[in-house]
Length: 430
Ligand SMILES: *Cc1c(COP(=O)(O)O)cnc(C)c1O
Image 1 (cartoon, rainbow, N blue to C red):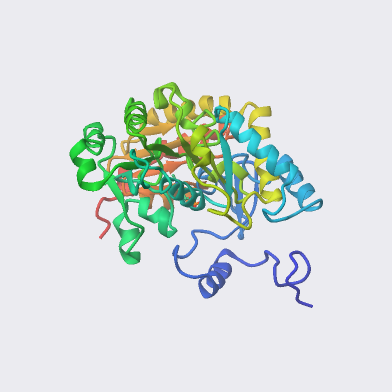
Image 2: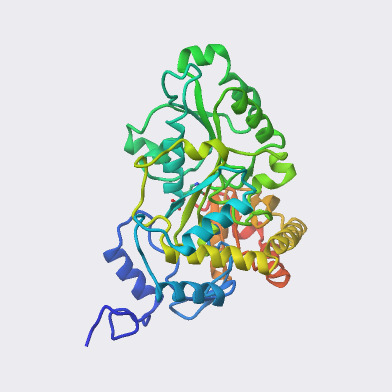
């Protein structure tokens, strides 16, 4: 008998080799990602196993998602208990988990009185909501609303039409134009360019700025931290001109950089208070959930009936996020990120491989920069050696391991980088 219920019958067993599953994948899943590097069947802590039984140290955590690693017992229990109690109710109703999560997010964001949370299911949806908020910023004369939004070159804010308009990469944008208008991409980290966007002449030509949307560390662009002082200057300028400062912490938030949000580090945010922060990736520890934290007055830009989501704030997703934040706090994982992140970085910097140029990033969001553009080949070699990493740029390997990574596991990762020999990776393999 064949059944669609996992564990009952043939249809959903995990039997079969990686090769056989890869064939089935390409025959059934739309080709937007290319063939999978492996088909994975199981995870525990910082490790995953493929369908052939091979184990990998997961140094990517589902792209900065699996904050607690895989199959964490507290997360598993919280999700199971919530699903067995009340799985979904729609936003006609509230649930204790959703309310508690909103309160917890406001607490860890150190958000002032009047701040509020909007729940989404992904990062791109959080940016969509934030984008809509920017369209509600009034002009100085109070007669209308602003439509001019600043973002940075190299920015990645998601793939839905609004989020894509904020994303800089031409290859992602071009096939889908026209995108929502009014977005200008400024040179990365360039304060003079930012100031120029607010001059009376720029305002006369293109209108008042509604918002600046930035990632404290650009993730998809190759783990590029903004230069020190940039966010403080951005805060001064946006505040002086009545524009919003929107921080996209979808990748950097939830402890990834060693504090709840990256901007909370003095070296990153200089003590600023943003207007809007978007979160997703690590928030549910692997369960899809996102959120927009709107600080102070920004919480009232969007009112009743102006935005919504059927699944947003779903109690199971909220339970997953509460459990994830709870374990990070209970187990001191922010400190672990800072300690193990520093170790990982130092050990790779000192690993001695002539292929490794430098390591950049914050906490456990790092890029190993190579001396030549062979990151895809290095990532493939890593997989063959039992490490999941990501070629985020032609010359950069991204590491975003679970926040539970141990010093021993960091040392294992560094040993892989130490083993890299330039001769293995010819610059022009042709
Ligand atoms: C991943 C990412 C997004 C998009 O999130 P999805 O959950 O993939 O939709 C947006 N912004 C940043 C900074 C990201 O890293």
